[in-house]
Amino acid sequence: MRLAIIADIHGNAHALEAVLADISRQGVERVVVNGDMVNRGPNNIAVMERLSAEGFDMTLGNHDDLVRKWVERSADLPESWFRDPFWLGTAWCADQLERAGWIDAFRELPMTVRVEVEGAPSVLISHGSPRHYREGYGSYLTDEEISEITQMHPADVLVGSHTHQPMERTWSRYLVLNTGAVGTPFNGDPRAHYLLLTLQKGTWRPEFRRVVYDRGPALAAFHEAGYLESGGISAHIFSEELRLARSLLVPFLMWSEEEGRDQSWASWELFGQRFPDRFREPEELVLGRE
Image 1 (cartoon, one colour):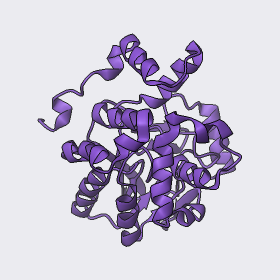
Image 2 (cartoon, rainbow, N blue to C red):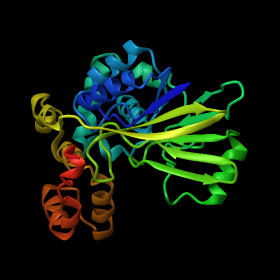
Image 3 (cartoon, one colour):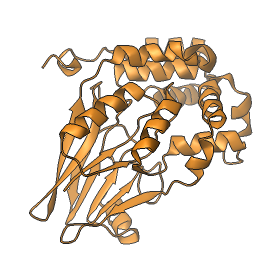
Image 4 (cartoon, helix red, strand yellow):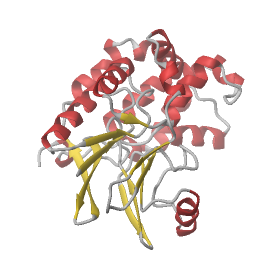
């Protein structure tokens, strides 16, 4: 059996199509979409229509839930966000998805998908961890945390996403994997990432697939959809994250909070001056000239 887990598409329909084409060449029998299908990118409706047409199992990601909370003006979100120009990007994505009738679909998504195959280790898939969709599997995950998760949510193989960085780690008899991101990788490699699991002799063998695609149209879509014009600074930051394959939004928010600065264009310009290494172009080798 071959199982593909894709995640963190974030409205990047071009990366999604490249990954689905690669999956079709791998003899995959099942695909699970591990959350964060939408927000950050401009082609959210196209992504949801494509995934829905395929009938894939999907889990709930924090950004899928964020747009639902935005539409409902949930008390889980600070009231100030709804008036803050910085969050116009999220408002734009939420409005597009609400108009297209996708919010109800997010309300119905499960937190986890379990894969059970007779004679094989069990696989538990969640966007973050089964405990919370923002608890991603990364290098900072401690042995104690893995132990707690496996006790609370028994499984042999834990598959998460959320951090936008592929990872493989073992602890005791458990295998912990991170899929990486289809739409916006954060490891300096701009290719579209996903996880392929192959069942061989009763063991799941992971392969981290990296798919080259033309990012030009994906970046142009930010302009063509009107997202950059309407989404303000956050939409601009999301396009830069796609271009550079690095995390920028969270570091910028953390820095501005520590410095006591607002999330304005002036602060963003200063952030770029303070941290030029974050804005390095990806290496040529990674761009598909291997």
